[in-house]
Length: 84
Image 1 (cartoon, rainbow, N blue to C red):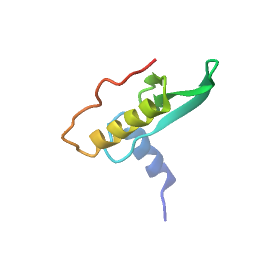
Image 2: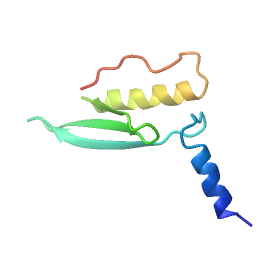
Image 3: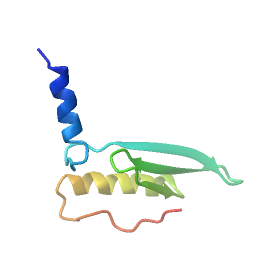
Image 4: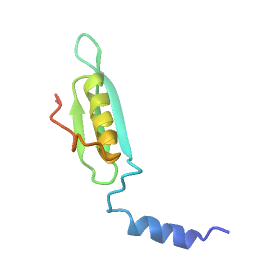
């Protein structure tokens, strides 16, 4: 049987610890400009850090780099990407 108090305590204890197996983001997309191109932002749920992107391609590249970096990729942390 699951102990909900234990699960809650574990979640709180791990809240500020980096977890390489789980990443949570809020992704927002909207149309911008006269051409109606898609723009977006990614907000890290754990840290609150938000990044803005002028194109969906850059947004997806950012998420890909974050995932690859978390998986222990030798590429290291995300590089500089074109952002708003």
